[in-house]
Image (cartoon, rainbow, N blue to C red; front, side, top):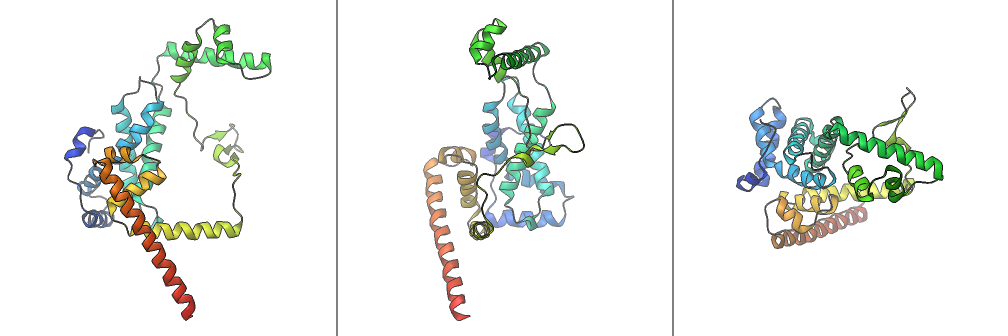
Amino acid sequence: MSQSFDFTSYNNIKRLSEDELASLWEEYLKDKTNKNLRDTLIVQYIYLIRYVVGRVKVTLPSTISIEDIAGYGVEGLINAIERYSPQKNTRFETYALIRIRGAILDKIRAQDFLPRSVRKKIKDIKNAQEHLKQELGRMPTTSEIASYMDMEPEKVLQLLSEDTTMTSIYDKKGNTDDSVEIIDTIQDTNKLNPQEQAEEQNVKQELEKALRRLPERERIIMVLYYQENMTLKEIGSTINMSESRVCQLHAQAIMKLKNILSENRTTRLRQSIIS
């Protein structure tokens, strides 16, 4: 399957029902060598790429095309579909969003889209920033850097905004064998005690089980709204649905989750009384 996609054609895609999608996954998981099944899944989840591209593009220079970003996203989606396993107890949408975003950022980090002259100016600005930091004993302001470089402050900000150098939380700090990943140096200031961790884990498990009982569209809306922080309008645009309809399905999903969770608590209480 070609690793590009015209997002405008997404509106013409026939979305499968929840049962049809479940059957498609079941068939594909039995035979992951079947490219036709894989490509059908790609089409069904292409909206996830549109969402990630929409979020990533606003932080990137104009020299990087939307087509390139979308192509990287398709690679991430293919990777997610081929690697996904229901046994991990993770919703595919959540797993795929991580893979798609990671694929896009990894590709961008591996390439330099800026002309050599622009890259040199950015390097000069960073060197000036470091020099002034040592001289002043603090981080210099944009105006101070601009004055040192004999440039306009707006130009300094523009050039720095073009810098696509990215740091991954899985990058190493240092170059020795003993170097640790950045993620391992981040302190969790909100770490829970063992009892709180157990309680939080139970809540998460209950909620995940309840979410799996929702229809696919409602489950997707909940994931995009609460986990990806999308607005109802953005969700509607992503899944080709009016904002009012998304709002209605969101309200329905909330009510169903409340009923499911209430039902689960009642069942546990009844079992504890019996035992």
